[in-house]
Length: 156
Image 1: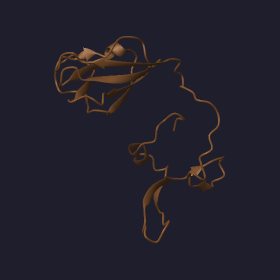
Image 2 (image 1 turned 60 degrees about the vertical axis):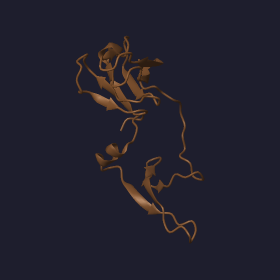
Image 3 (image 1 turned 90 degrees about the horizontal axis):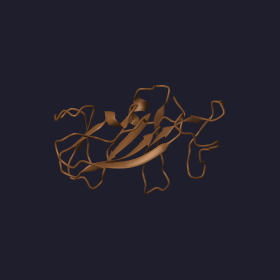
C-alpha cells in the first residue's frame, strides 16, 4: 500500500492482509458493549500490535509529501445552465478531488464528454470524486439545477 493511500472499507475488504476486528469496550457496568473496528499496526516490524487511543497515540514522524506533486490549486465551478455539460477548467494537472457544493439542490454529474446524458459519476451535496487525469479540460460537469456547482483541489 502506498504511503499516501487512504484506507476505506472497500480497500479493507479487498486486502485480506489487513485484519480488521471488533473488540468490546466495557467502561462501566451500565454500558454493555460498544463495537469498534480495530486495525492492528505493527510499528518497527516486531510483530507486536497495539490499540491506538488518545492515551496511546500513533507515533508520527517525518514530513508531509505530496508524492510527486509540486502544486496544489483550489477552485470552484458553478454550472450556469442545467443539463448543459461544461468543462471544469483548463490546465495541466495530475490528480483532482471534486466535491459537490453543500448548497447544491440537485445532482452534479462528472463526465468525460459534453454529451447530454446520464452517464458519468453522480455527486450529491458534499460527495466527492478523485480522478487522476492530465488536464482539467478533460472533465465535464452537468448539473440538474442551474447554478449548482463544485469545489476542487487540483494537484500538479
